[in-house]
Length: 173
Image 1 (spheres, helix red, strand yellow):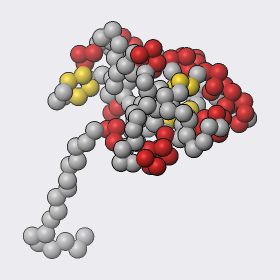
Image 2 (image 1 turned 60 degrees about the vertical axis):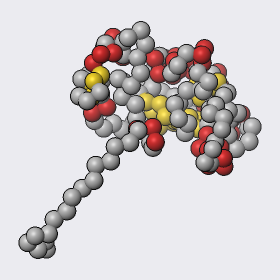
Image 3 (image 1 turned 45 degrees about the horizontal axis):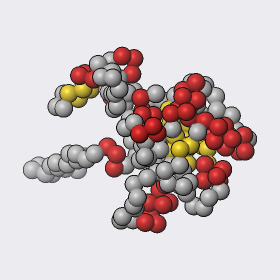
């Protein structure tokens, strides 16, 4: 390929927190009562060996129809949903109705809160850390719709401060 003798290249390895960019949480990401999804024990995650079960490497790829619910337009409060607002199942259903869309089994649900707009307008110190997001009620409704994945433009998908003051409670639904 045109490489002369004695020529080579090395590749960098970057290590960073996964929440610094777009990502998809593995099922091993959060646990409650010492159990992950499907009752898998919390001790299946090892600091150096990684996830023995439920790791992101088990996902592979997937393709699905996506539905975007624009909660900024639904609430009409400005450029972003009020920080710390708990988005409920009724809110999601209302936004879907207003937009004329239906959430179906097998869909990917994307929820726009406008948090990135807030962050960029207030960088490098976007305080407070409060973020609009879904609460337990919305998470249970989404699960009942048999949605395959949920995404949002905030840090955790769920509302911060956390619903019912329970750390990452929506992740445990």
